[in-house]
Amino acid sequence: MKLATYNVNSINARLPVVLRWLDECQPDVVCLQELKAVQENFPAEALENAGYTSIWHGQKSWNGVAILSRIGQPEEICRTLPGDPEDTHSRYIEAKINEVVIGCLYLPNGNPAPGPKFDYKLRWLDRLIAHGQSLLEQGPPVILTGDFNVIPTEFDVYKPERWVDDALFRPEIRESFRKLVTQGWTDALRKLYPDETIYTFWDYFRNAFGRNAGMRIDHFLLSPAVVPRLRAAGVDRQVRGWEKTSDHAPVWIELD
DNA sequence: ATGTCAGGAGCATCCTGA
Image (cartoon, rainbow, N blue to C red; front, side, top):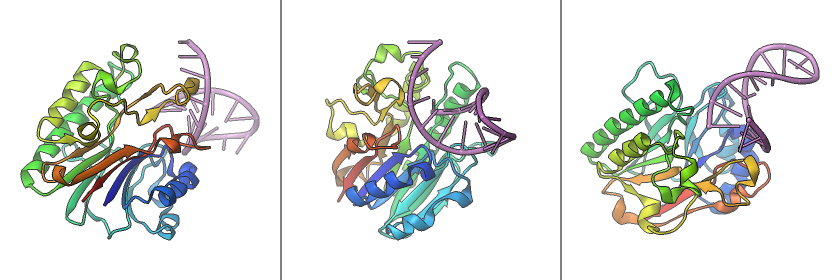
């Protein structure tokens, strides 16, 4: 079973790229972020024609998350992250597929920091920690994946010194992510490649991809029951080099 | 500060967000 996560930066602007990627890379389950489409403008039919059934939570202009599957209908569990009924952003959707719970998330960017957006990011992380704890206590195999907007360590960005004041790398954000992971999650890419430079995002500015000035902010966190099934993982870097592409590349894992 | 995309308002070209 191959699972992937991909921040598409507008599903409709990206549809040709997404369809080509699905055809070439053949993931079974896909988590998408930054749909940038209202609920009724999600291209469910085009994805259905490619072999995938979808559940999604859209929003006008920004955010938006989806789970696609070609190995059985995703059984939706929830479409908001618990803990704040006032939160109107579409940033979380969770479903069960083949007895595995999959949480697809788009964590707030948080810039500029400090400020209200940064505070929202910290609160969102606190809620994710609470929800993560609850999922681990419930016991089923769980995968939390998506665009975390967190650079976990200095090895995950091309020039860490330039990012120390940025909301993706500030110490309190890294600390919060560490707190989440140490609940019992395994960072799948780092587990398989402890010493490699791995990036999943390259800015559109200043030829960042050409210079490999990237960062690793899209992650797969595995609950203990999933870890023994992890066989392979990677980043579909080539997709970042295509025409009209996202600023993120797809990230994937393979499970037994 | 720079730079590049995308969506939205609204009709040209800004603005916001990332």
